[in-house]
Structures are given as C-alpha cells and as structure tokens.
Amino acid sequence: MDKSRKERGQGMTEYLIVVALIAISAIAVFSNFGRTMRNQVAGLAHELVGTDSTKYGVKYAQKDAGYANDAASKQKTMGDYSSTNILSKQK
Image (cartoon, rainbow, N blue to C red; front, side, top):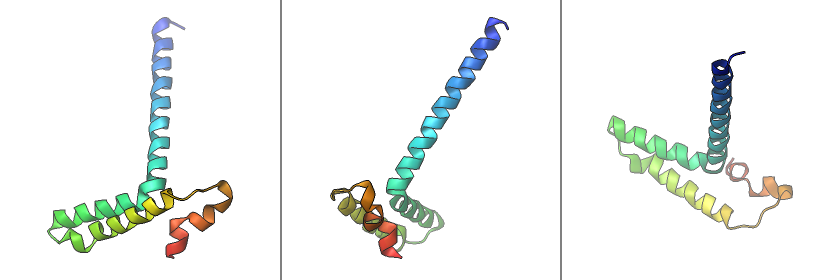
C-alpha cells in the first residue's frame, strides 16, 4: 500500500471520530434541553408563518426552562432517575 492511501484512510478515520463526537454531543444536549429547544424552534416557526409565537412556543419554552432549572438544582443519583424525570411528571 502506498503512503497516499494510508494517509487517506487515516483522514477518513479522523473524520469519522469527529462526526461521532458531534453526534454524541448533540444527543447529550437534546436529552438535557430537548423540550426547551423544540419549543423555541416551534416559536421560531410560528414567527416565520406570521402567527404570534408568544402564545405558543416561547411560553412553553420558558416553562420548560423553569422545569430544567428546578431539576438541575436537585441532587440526583442513578437510582432516582424516574423520580426526577420531567417527562414522567408531565404525562
């Protein structure tokens, strides 16, 4: 195998590692702030189509941000995941 093929393979491997790290980071961010981010995007979508976003996405994003702030201030362990899960309380 010549040197250029090895370097190309190394570059592809590095690229895949970077893409994997970005994907893992995105999953972590959306798992922690997913509801708030979805509501903010919904508010932006309402603004784009001309409706008032304060009635929809922004209000819910602020509410979910409050839930996230309350949840972040509590001490948690792996054993009490279901008791601190915001989604399980809002169903």
